[in-house]
Length: 123
Image 1 (tube, helix red, strand yellow):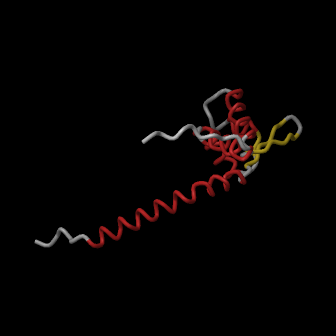
Image 2 (spheres, rainbow, N blue to C red):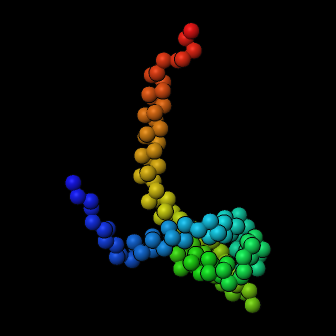
């Protein structure tokens, strides 16, 4: 049996999905998304107050999120306001859905097996 060769990707849709998954790989970026989800649009200064890092590092995380389409940026005077853009997350959810169905089926089968097993407390 031979191992499959490398998967060829190249469509714009696949590149977008790769950017989203790469952006979600960072705990810092996931926390930024949570802050924007829970607190609504926020300036960089407000977001920076939640992290123990220099602003250029946070700006790099925000750039990755922006390029993945997970946040948008607008200027208000000298401030940059960031806002959650959830549409790419729906695409991730669509991708994960078959795996959720798989695990639900496996857990259902496990539950049925456990229901058929005799109880140990028969002494």
